[in-house]
Image 1 (cartoon, rainbow, N blue to C red):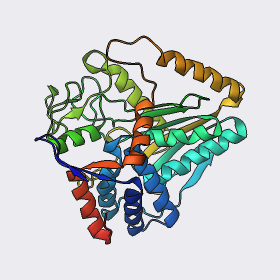
Image 2 (cartoon, rainbow, N blue to C red):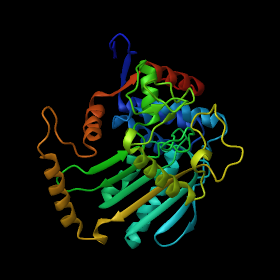
Image 3 (cartoon, rainbow, N blue to C red):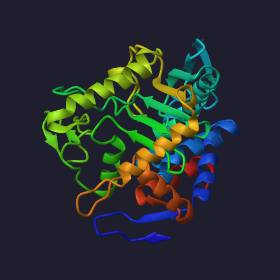
Amino acid sequence: MRLRSPTTLPMTTTLSYTQLFAFTEAVFSGMGCPDEDATLATETLLSADLRGVDSHGVARLIGYVRLWEAGRINAAPRVGVTYETPSTAVVDGDGGLGLVVGPRAMQVALDKARQVGSGWVSVKNSNHFGIAGYHAMKALAHDMIGVAMTNASPLVAPTYSLERLLGTNPIAVAVPAGEQPDFVLDMATTTAANGKLEIAQRKNLPIPEGWAQDAAGVGSTDANAVKNGGALLPLGGATGSHKGYGLGAVVDIFSAVLSGANYGPWVPPFVAFLQPSENPVGQGLGHFFGAMRVDAFRPADEFKAHMDNWIATFRAAQAVEGHHVLIPGDPERETSAVRLLEGIPLLEPVLKDLETVGSKFGVKL
């Protein structure tokens, strides 16, 4: 089904989740991923599209393929623990897809939490792992609190800097509830993720003020500002960007300085046309995962009852006219329910990219 959007916008094509899953899985298989890894990578990637985070879903598939073609992704990694204590571990992703390395490392955190109450895992030698929320949410089914972070391509200028030294460095925290929907925070430590600029580029739209600065350090509404030598801006805007800078720095340290991955300006870029640093300080890209058993603090049912009360209280808060108070995770959960039934909309440039990818492996949408 193709719908013509307003005049300046490209067409949108809606594909079912099942159709998109089969296509994406076939592409990962074509790259040489073992069957189990191809399925896991597809589930991880498409979780972004289901939850409405279109910047991190199949729109990124062509990027993974290009990195693989450039020899920068190992399609069949041997992911393993290189150092551990009862509650902590370092996982080496062996250059694999972060979409596979991430879930495997989160499983290590869950296993350790099951044994000793909490598990903390720092990862090196990985790649882009999709949306952070997917990994944190793995804890929910086990009555655990999940935490996920990752560093990313250096596109962000710290407060007052003209240099790009950090990534969008997201943080996700998932907390189980009882009768209420679970609490799921998934946020970049920048005002906006780079993928949102990419969407604006595809739609030929400007970006809001406060998202980016140009090469001279002046705020810009040009969606191509970062491409043209500018930078993304930390969360907090003109008067509070030091807070986003600080959060992004913590993610970088936990994900990479702790594990032995590259950090700061040495993080390998996601785009294949930019080469990694000739003098890396670590291995690949880094992640950080945590899992905490709720019953290590108080009985799980008791905790979830109070989480229900917390959520209900905030949801019922008196709001400004025309709005209502949301709980982190509400928009994504609602979008997921709709898209599972009605399909996932793809902008025409994304569809063309997918067709290009499919032609490489003899796979059709």
